[in-house]
Amino acid sequence: MEGDLPRYTARGDAPRDLRTEDELTANGYTRLGEPQAELVRKDDTILPLYSTSEARRLKHDLWPRGRSLRGASPPVAVEHVPFGRPRRGGNPGATSAPEPGAPRGELSGQLTGGRALAPSHPGDPRRWLAELFSEGFVVIDTETTGLGRRAEIIEIAALAHSGEVLLETRVWPRAGRIPAAASRVHGMTISDLAGAPTWPEVLLELERQLDGRRVLAWNAPFDERMALQTSRLWSLVPQLPAFECAMRGYAQARGIGSLSMRLERAAQVERVLTAPQEHRSLGDAQLVVAVLKSLTEARTVPA
Image 1 (cartoon, rainbow, N blue to C red):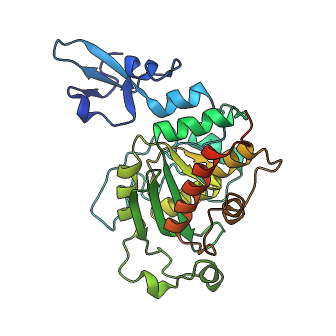
Image 2: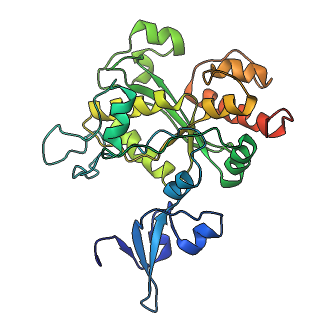
Image 3: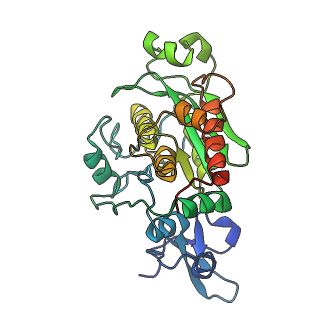
């Protein structure tokens, strides 16, 4: 019905993810999904705007990109508030993020409003790699207080494939502590985070930097879960694009039977590891980009 969708009168006012049908079909997308907004031109004609991320997903689900990290339908009414304070809905403390540590199937159902996800398939590794570097992408990496249900992000980096650092910051944890076991992995203690912004501040900037972009992470399900858990601890509903799993894509491109491989091992195979892995977010994100770039030059990538 008319008036149900957001309307924009200037093309530059619309989110970067939204494109017209002509713009998407010119880039090879034929299945567009439902319109997400409308563009009102000067002659009063109205053009529907579609999500590039959704069109890409419909074109081919090469490897699981997770789910868009958004609240389930119906969404909680939220708004951005000053730094250091969470965004809340009408029911204090309620969010549409799932319970941390929920089973994978349960997690997917909640984040898609109960709709089943389209099954992924191996696809064409060469096409996947070519599209990655032609479209551009961002790699996300996180360091955390642990692996469990109450673990939270304490460092995060967002690196463009070009090498541009879009975001790199430490994060003060809501728990105010870092277990010794986690410190032994990445070397950070709670004193290292003194003065660091809280997750509500960081999430605002992360959402801005990732809007409309293609996002990858090594072992994406882990980084997705940590973004959701950390947001839940602050009563936030994250508005992030889906994370595509670089680890699974790499394994398929290399013809590896298992879809699981440590980043350090992949970097050794590709001969891009010049020093021991430090397990810091920016350095790991740079390793992911280096590993993927090496694949574009490898002649052993299966057709």
